[in-house]
Length: 231
Image (tube, rainbow, N blue to C red; front, side):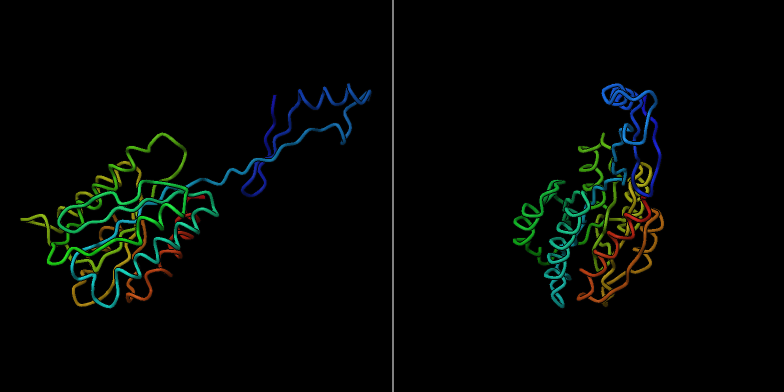
C-alpha cells in the first residue's frame, strides 16, 4: 500500500511494501527511519491556455497587434516554465486556429510572428470564443484546467443582427464546459469595456482595461492569477 501526506504543492508517498523490503534487506528487526521509502510528487495542476486575439482593422492603431504578438511569445515562455501549454486563435470576420495547443514556445513564436491584420474586417468576438472552445474540445481528456484570454479593443461588430449577444452566448457555452475566460480590453475609442466585463464575469475570470503597451504585462499577470485560482 501507499500512504500519502501533502506538503504544500507536493505529496510525499510512503510505500509500505518497499519499506518492508528495505527493512528485511537491512536485516532490521523493526522498521527504522532509514528503511522508510519516500517519493515526492508535484501535484500542481497543469493549465492549457488559449489566447484569442483580435485581428480586425482597429488593431493597427498604436501598434496593438505588435504588442499582442509579444504577449503570445512571452506567455508561451512563461507557460513552458510551469508545465502549461498555449494555443492561439485569431478572429476578425471569422476565426481560425493559428497555433494548436502546444508546450513548445518555439512553435508559438514561429506562428505568431507572421500574423497580419485583416483590413476593413468586422470583429466577430463570439466566433473567436467558439473556435477556441472547439480547440479545447479536441484536446479534452487530460487533467489540465482550461483558460481563455481574450485580447481585443472590445467592440463586437459581427455576426448580425446582434454581435454582443452572440459573443455572450459563446462565452456562456464555454463556461458550461468548465472553461474560464479573462478579457484584456485595449481601452481605446473603439472599445466596449462593458461587453468585455460581462464576458469575463460569465467566464469567472478577470478584466483588464489597459493601453496597448500594457498587453504583455496584463497577459503575464493573468497567467499567474489563473494559476493561483486553479491551485
